[in-house]
Length: 182
Image 1: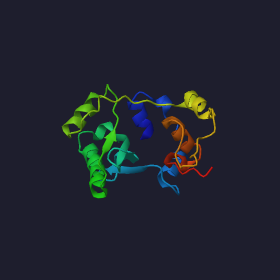
Image 2 (image 1 turned 30 degrees about the horizontal axis):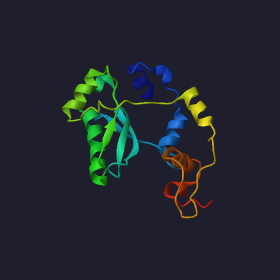
Image 3 (image 1 turned 120 degrees about the vertical axis):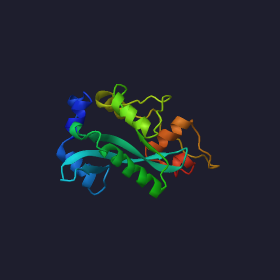
Image 4 (image 1 turned 90 degrees about the vertical axis):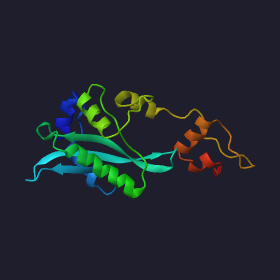
């Protein structure tokens, strides 16, 4: 069904995940994602929702990011998509998560209409950015220009906010709080 979704979204060439990768992501020792399956009464798979936890620094709690919602074309209009979304909304409510978010392609009017009918609001003031392939490798291969800043003798952390963030990302987790041991 992942390939069916990729074909529907006109991006089949981007669907590179193997069955093994998905199996590990969903059922491995440390799952990275979760899936809900919608089935017909006779056990046929009608669709799926694949999701993972995100976190809001503004609200201070987790939320759910819905990576994929797909209902097979022959089963659309049968309530499967709504049931999948309702199951995720129920998890949010039960666990105290305050957001259920997802993205939708601008041209996908049937889905946009469906989401609006459920009360979902577009976040038009936000633009999604993504690093992949060569751009990701290039940025990820860059080395920090200087050693991570550490706290001075008074325990105050020097450096700018980006330097402190880089220090934290570079392995000095205490640097972000000013308690760097170096």
